[in-house]
Length: 309
Image (cartoon, rainbow, N blue to C red):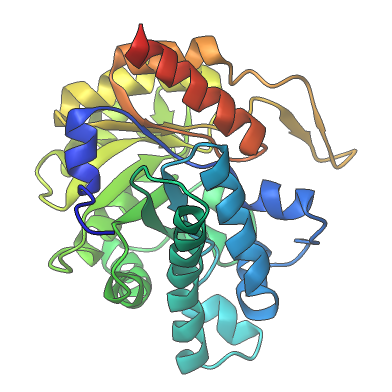
């Protein structure tokens, strides 16, 4: 789209709306994601479903589509019998699917700028053993960098607008990711999964955000896949430590009950909270798990009211 500002330019000028959970939308459309590859499985089996999910979020008001590559790794695909060349093609397809959704949205008359963020999930998403929410894998920074580098190189080569280093549970892994993206020529955002004022691995956010402050590739820092209640304090810390725009896309606020295998409680990602996050300095705002197009539409309306008010 000729004349489209970069995402950083858009952040400097105002607020950008992110999409919601890819898995949430795919499951709502009737797809079974009970698989180690999660939504990445559909890249191989039903890529059109991924494109339609992105389109639903664009039509709901999202400015950014986050690709279905969170759980997509060379190692994970290899366990399913997909060779390295095939895995690379599927990683590239994750970005192409989001680009196609943006093309369809524009064909339907959408005129606002649309961007694609290539998702880079944490190491723990690959074994699918819950370690993505704990960190502390027992791997060194160098080992984690070697794991991430091939995937980020492949995704960067497809030309996304930004790499989303997301749901990072551990400051050690964040350091590895920042090393892995160095020199690729693609901007990134870094978002931790947190519990209170600490990473999931237990490091204070005051320290965890530090390395991003001096990383030229990083255009935004923040949190995702956390409770809405944990967002507001993290915004202040991220902005103070790094001086960069803040990204925030938490879960709905409902709680997963492993015993009953069901979500309980009520959503706490509300328009009032969205407005408070904006007032605190967040400039990329959306949702993660259990956040669908309806909530993204509410986020856009809340932010429009702030801008118009």
